[in-house]
Image 1: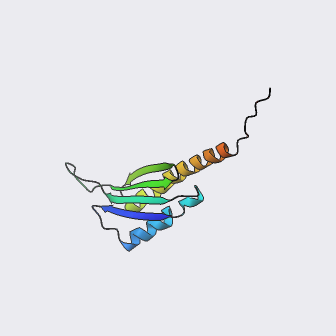
Image 2: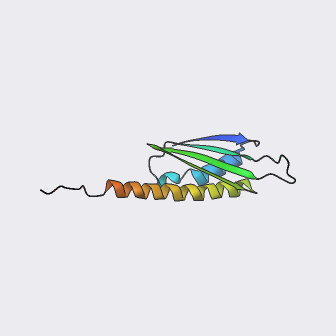
Length: 112
């Protein structure tokens, strides 16, 4: 599994990279065969607003025949990554279960 990172408005430090790998890197146990994960971590614009911006975490997870996309925002980057993991875990588990049900469904036999 290949994980690529993009920082939008922030620098991807070693601490951020290792935290994201710890949280996102084990998603293949919920959907085996993940080919690539693209993470975009950043700070949302505060244009026309007072105060600090929100941190965003977006992911595109590529599996054979499908791409899962999720995005989360939070006041803290690490909380956004945690929420992103939770959403991806739910989506990947649901899709994998659906695929297993489809693969193990008995074939219909026409009886004449």
